[in-house]
Image (cartoon, rainbow over all chains, first blue to last red; front, top):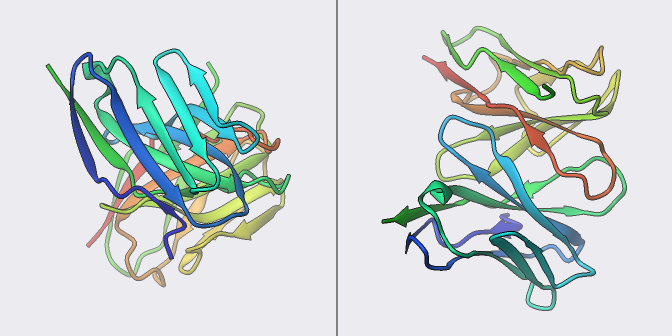
Length: 114
Length: 113
């Protein structure tokens, strides 16, 4: 039962263009969402997050949009750079106030080409 | 320089042997976690601990055991009962405040033959 889904396993974007990575979730109790970036043989690094009380959060080139009614979120990277090439994981948690247990999607491999 | 240290980076074991993966953090985080990553799958939670001397099973705890005797350390033992132990194992920690992100180590790749 995959509660967090990233339906695109891979995405290729030209340098300078916008990258849009999508994520869908099924559990209506999730109300905090995070994006992580992962290089091969390394641990994921936190990129950006959004709480359910917002529909947009921006940090430099990275913007996360949340559509709670559609149970959908997306990560926009503008402009895309070659160093952005990595696997991106969407993650979600219920704001239970207890441990930050995260449920992860399967990841989308982004390749930024020259 | 604060962070999470996992050792070793690569580990090889024969089937039937128990093996312990190390995880140490100096971030003063209360909560620690173990995740497993397999090709084509997301990270799946094995065990987590919110406080010293206490831990809870995650989604795939069977065949694994943990201890939390110190705040800084959360070792994971992969026992011979784990059916498919070959994987990339990731340790993480967090402040356990609502909304705090997890900080990950660089992982240990375990290969069991």
